[in-house]
Length: 260
Image (cartoon, rainbow, N blue to C red; front, side, top):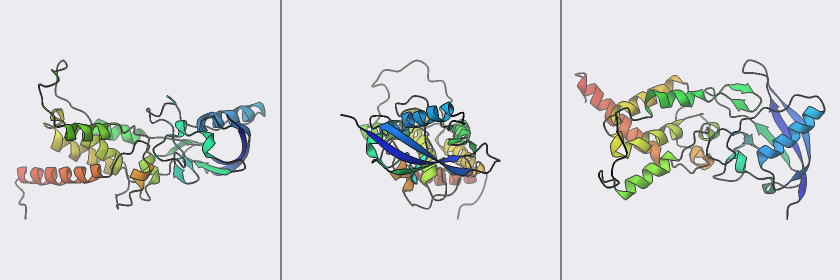
């Protein structure tokens, strides 16, 4: 049986990337504990609009935890206090009556604030555009057993492919690194036969684009893995680093460079 709780929200309000931001305090009254976090924000926005005030801007889409649109820091934790859960799936039953919640956008140079809790994550799209695909024509779907794939590789590829690109890994990392996201996209294709022809070019291009987007470096804090709502593992970063080193050495040798 659901119950209602009262909360104090301290929400980051910012007009755009160039304007100064601030925390504004709002009272969220009679919040049904069966509501999701985003439904709670909708409820607060309804009251703000009734008072003639500007509603809180936040990203959302599918409300099923698969699109990667939603995202905010709740009391300093990406997507809130429950592990492997997106903000749209976080229900208010995980909070107590009288709690104070500080709600902020992702903090990263590569994710400029658009408005309030909404940030521009198009840097991820540009990284995918740099090489996160298979460009050869694959034709129609092949027979299931025509290209044997070891189960361990198929499982690892699937585990990497479930990354939804929400950006929680970047927001949680003290360096605002995108290594977990990029490594998941690189690993997904690197583990499958279809991804082999472009494997070396892909990792070089995607890592280079990541650097151009001004993401930070990975220093093995593992905060990214802890914050990821899909449980993407940092083992993907190690795989990507091995692929990158191999590809960089091969490219240097191909240019006539001497590897010492």
